[in-house]
Image (cartoon, rainbow, N blue to C red; front, side, top):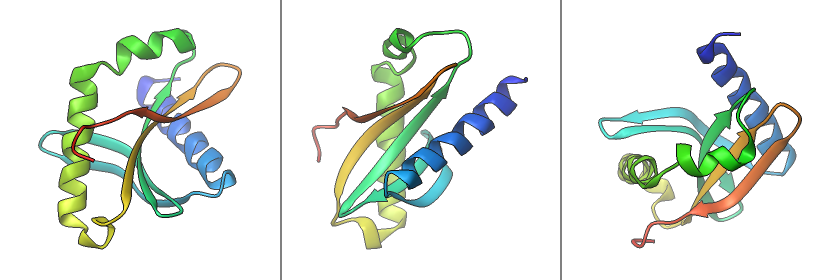
Length: 118
C-alpha cells in the first residue's frame, strides 16, 4: 500500500472511530500556508483538531518523534487560521488530539498537546 493510500485509509478509520465515540466531523484535510490538519471535529462544546498517524511498521512510542514541537506549532497555527475563517466556532473550547492507527489497534490521545493561547 502506498504512503498516501495508507494515510487516506488511516484517516477514514480515524473518522469512523471519532464518530463512534460521539464526535461530529466538521472538516477534513484543512490546509493553510502554515500546515495541514487532518480532521476537525466537535466534541460537545469543544472543537477538536486531530492529527492522524497511520503506521504499519512503527510503534506507538514513535509518536513523540513524529509530532514534535515544530509539527505541533504548524497544527496550532493552522487551527488559528481555521478559527479565523469559521467564526461560528471561535467561542468554543479548543483541543488538540492525535489518533494513532497502528497495525493492531486505534489509539486516541485526547489533549495530546496544547497551545498557551487557549
